[in-house]
Amino acid sequence: MNLRKSAAVAATVAALALTATACGGESGNAGDKPAGGSGGKNQPKLPTYTVAKDVKVDSPTLKKAQKAGKIVFGAKDDQPFLGFQDTDGKRSGFDIEIAKMVAADLGFKPDQIEFKTVDSNVRETTISKGEVDLYVGTYTINDERKKQVGFAGPYFMAGADLLVRADEKGVTGPDSLKGKTVCSIKGSTPLQEIKKPKYGAKTVELSKYSECVQQLLNNEVDAVTTDDAILKGYAAQRPTKLKVVGKPFTKEPYGIGMNKDDKALRDAVNNAIEAHEKNGDYKKAYDATLGLSKSAYTEPPALERY
Ligand code: GLU
Image 1 (cartoon, rainbow, N blue to C red):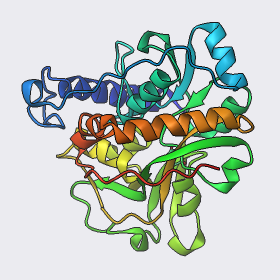
Image 2: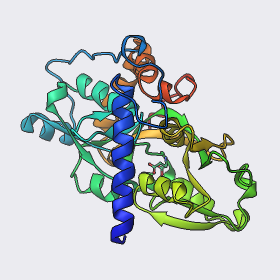
Image 3: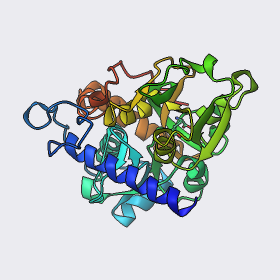
Image 4: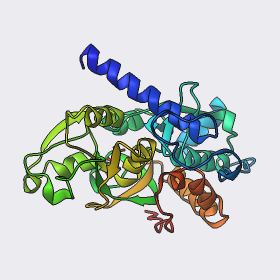
């Protein structure tokens, strides 16, 4: 990336961080209203999770984490309402809450969780090398990836959609992309999909979604494609400039990634997801994060357990 572009990307990330802070109830960002309404008093509250004691699971990954006194989660840092890191280093979003729920059931307090930013194109290698214990970051479960990593879940069902400028008339769905330039990120399933000849689209392939959003705002591309849940977060941050087309064209079941062979951990994480779906934490966490970006709540999908 050249200097001008990296400066522009930094500016977008900073602007997103500002509006994300606004969502937490502080001052707004000029031009666009903060997503999630007035903030403050009326804002839905995040749940707190009871930390389990004396957890015993026959999992090499968990035993290593228990010995270290901390558990390491891979996550995204530029997806508002899902996996976001503000300028103070604070992480927020639905995926971050899912990580905290799971960590609590595995016996780790919030201050024993270490988050590492891991983007889509390096997820499988980072997990296989053991550089993170678990990964929660809009990670679609599929057979190709299952050859390299294990998945608990799914805990959420998304679908690939298109983000366009608010005044866009020509891009109305995946069938309208002939000759258009679409940005997505390396190692993501929506990029793989949009490269199929039937769409006739040209692609720009970057490392971070926030870079694609900046290119869209700069008129350098016609659309950004990835999961609707991610795109709605960007649109909510920039309601006067961006909109989501609203015609999802794939199914993206989100899983929690981990070592491929650690079945005991996979089972324990599935149990944790199930428990928090049942006790209402899941819905509460959703309302206080993704729910603020106009993603309508739907019941979580059935766990796969394999
Ligand atoms: N869920 C899709 C995937 O796992 C797109 C979002 C992402 O890149 O994380 O590839």
